[in-house]
Length: 147
Image (cartoon, rainbow, N blue to C red):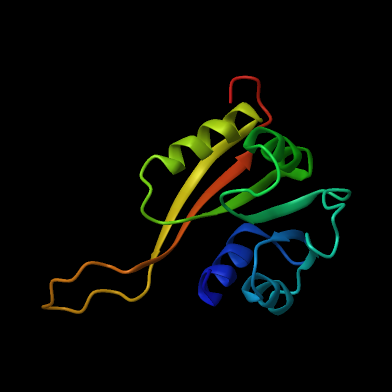
């Protein structure tokens, strides 16, 4: 995840003093949390994440040690109403986003947004493919019965 994407997620999905659960590898999200005056729990340092409800959980994908259903149920239980889970996906697998959304929906999370960020914008007059560097699914806590 780029520094710019981390900043975008933190600023757009949280307010000052909100808790962010950082389950990603790398310092980008931690830097964005500090710069935005948010609070965070780092999963590798605090394996008991979720004791306090968070506004945002950011995670990589695929998961290493838990099933998607169990993971998303834990995320939902640890989110404040209106909170979000941002799932960083490996780019290029067209079916994976659908699989992730299905698993999340079964756990009571709803699809909110799919962000695809390019490495650099195309230049005028040049026909180039965008170099995708981040593919992020944003899921939100669903509190209604019909979701």
